Structures are given as structure tokens and as C-alpha cells.
Length: 485
Figure 1: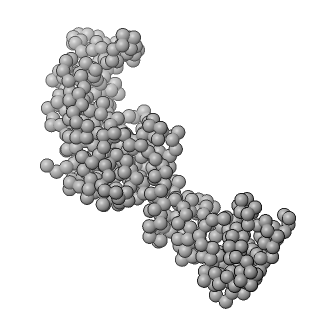
Figure 2: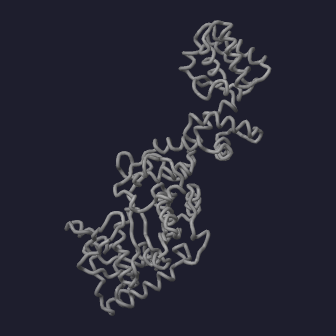
Figure 3: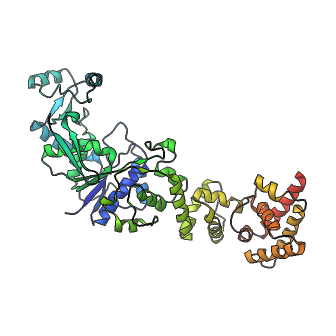
């Protein structure tokens, strides 16, 4: 049996980290077993669909490193891969169930159904369908139809007994039929419901394993009942744990970024987010926490997925992202960073690419995201408009500081070769001549040239800023110190 798995997002919102992690688990399982990974868009919720988010999903999956064998953009032999284009399959299956008597027309109004639910709540019963249309005669059905009542199609669920979900992660989970009731499989607008369409499409596309979030576990007995009513073989089911916020509540926007687009805009790397998501819910393979998607394929299997919910920790993601930034090929780093500089109002058209790469390498040791990298590098492109206040108090307060800064400026201006080694030698000579510790020069010079108290090594920093700009900034800082005193 060839493994065939699918990820089937609903285009009602942007890709969420929990959904992308589930897609990654499907991808890894398919690749690990030489199977097919399928993307299917489940767009039957016509009232909430946002068609533009389909492209967002495809882009997000590619960004974290996934590809797929079949899907709406690449085609395949089991299409169509958009659920609304598979209505003929849903209609044929529904008609078969209605003809066999396993499904029936329900003419209950919204008000009647709400009254039934309210009665059940009052009597402390599960809010299941009362079954009022289950045994209508043909004459009663015709009368209701003549009244102009819209109808849905409901599956007849056995009144007694249970449905057992044999879950590959959680073991057997039992659902009593009395809690399910006869559920709708075709809505009044003739569109299949999620549970019905998912079961019909999974079978129609040869899906062997349904790997999805645990929030879908309650849907699974209904889908099993659809399979059974249609006489179809069951796929294997596996429900992966949820991702919870640090306070163990359901992850939401109040906990910070949750969509892939937000992380991307904040300067995280797709590889880092992928790595982090795979750490959420997987039992560790040794002590290694950094691994590529290709490496994950070699060790992935469903028995490594934990049963308990994983706790989201953006600090861990940020730490991982910083490591990926520092390990990144410098040409790739430049390509990734350029859009962030442009967005921050720092145009790079006239900037020497070789110099830009040197700047990026210099600042990436102390940053964790591409957005932070822009701010860490800003003084290489713009004159400092202010100095770190704590640094001013500590490094600009001595009376002789303006004179020392001017002397450093003169020493740098006269350097024959302006590079890090030359800057180092110039400050060493001046410290010896003035009989002061080198730190007495290094800290004020850093503050004057960058406006910061921390950053890359000073000599590299000054060399990258360049002779003319460094000298100008040193003199300007000296003037400002004197003007403020």
C-alpha cells in the first residue's frame, strides 16, 4: 500500500502555526515512507471563505521548505483538489445514501432546531438532533415541501452502540451514538457539510492516513459513520496534540504572533520556524535541537508524536532564529535582509553589495531576526541623531573627552590604510601617547560613531563606517559634548 496523506486547509483565514505544523507532520510522514503528500482546499464554508488566502497557504508552505506531489497548483491524477469542484462526487454519494434509506430529508426550521437545543440544555442532555423528521411519511414530507420549507439531508445514526476511533497516537477513543444524533451531511444550499465532504473526498483521493489536529477528533466518529454507510474502507487516523500558549490557554492573537505571515514580517526565517514547529509535539531524538527538514524526514514517525499538548514559547523560536541567521550563507542572508532595509526606509540601490554583506556579517552576531538586523545596522547608513543616554553619562562626562575624540579623528584622518588593523593601531598609539587606558578611547569612540554602547568589534565597525564618516561623527560628537556642558 502506498502511503497517501493530505493536508486540507480551509481558506477562511491566514495560515496558523498549528496548521503549518500539522502540514509538516503530513509531509514528513509521506517522505519518510515514500508516499504522496497531497494538498486539498476545503472551501465548502462559502460564508467565511477568503479565496485570496489559498495563495497565502501555498506560499507559507513553500517558505518553510515543503513541496507537495498533488494539489490545486500542480494538479495530479486524483483531482480536482478544491473541494467546491468536487460537488458531483458529494452529490452522487448523498443520493446513494438517500435512495438506500440511510439518509433522510429534514425540514426543521432554524427556530425549531434552536428550541430543541434549548430544551436539551434545560434538561441537561447533549444538544443532539431530536429526530423529528427521521420517520416522516412520504405524505408528510411532500406537505412540508409544498409549504416551501428548505431541507437538509441527515445521516441516520444508530440509536444505540458506539463508534470507536482507532487513533495511531491516542489509542482507542470511544463515542456513544446517543451523543452524536443524526447529523446533517448536505446543507439547505445543496453544499456538502465538512464531515461528509471530507470523508467522501478522502476516499475518492485514495488517502490512507488522515493526520490532523486533535480539534478534529470529535469529527472523526461522524466521518467513520459516513464511510460505513457508503460501504467504504476506513483510512487510518492520527490526531496530533494542540499547541497551547505559555499560560496553557488556547493559542490566540493575545499571545503574540500566531500566523506564518506575522513571523515572516517580523524577520524570522522559514527554516527556523520549521525547525521550531517540529520541536513542538515530537519526542526528542537525542539532544540535537537544530535540524533541517531533510534530516527530520530520516527520523520521523507517528510514534514520536507526543499525546500531550505542546507549549508555545516564542523565546525559543527567537533563539533558534538567531542561530540560523549566524549560520546562513552570506549571499542568502543579503537576499533575505534587503526587503527589510527597503521597508525601513534604507534604500540599497547605490550600496556596494560586498560592503553590505560585510555589514550584515558584522551585526548578525547580536541579533535574532532580520528586523532586528536592520536596526542594529542603521548607523552604517544614517548619521546618529542621538546617543545612548546611559552611554553619555558614562563615556562622555569626563572633561577631556571632546579633546580625545578630536585627536582620534585626526589620527584616523591621517591613516595610510584605513582598515580594522589600522584603526586598532591608531587608537593604541594615541592611548600610549596620552597615557590613558585604551578603553578610555574605545568606549567614547564607539558611542560617537554609532550612537550605541554595544555592537560589532569597534575596529571593524569604524572601518566599515569609513574614514570620512567616522572622522565627521567624532568631531560632531566633540562639538555636541562641549555645547551641552
